[in-house]
Length: 132
Image (cartoon, rainbow, N blue to C red; front, side, top):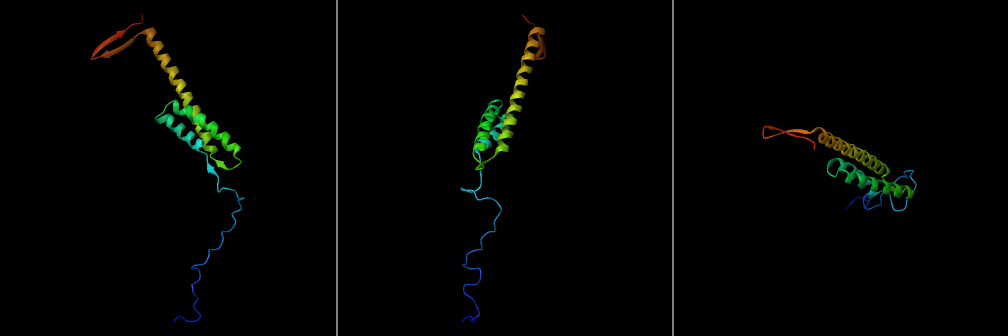
């Protein structure tokens, strides 16, 4: 038999934990802000445009980025991810700019080759393809 001074249940067992101190944050219905899915997609596609989806990834990064920015701005703090959306937009524009430069470079190379001829080696034999 336990001594009369022993408490049952012991302190801390079976009792409710103390409430958490206030964090200074205003209470938001629905919990913490959620990340906008379009913002995440914009960032991923902006990166993927340089790796596996050239041009298509960049165009989609722009579309999703601008949609996400609008949704986040209208959400009143319920959604977050504006930085990801802006990063996706920036990557999208950089990728499109680089794609345009590559296309211009290809056009220049083809134009120069068409006007000056092309000198190549096939199976060890030099071949010259003259214009016209």
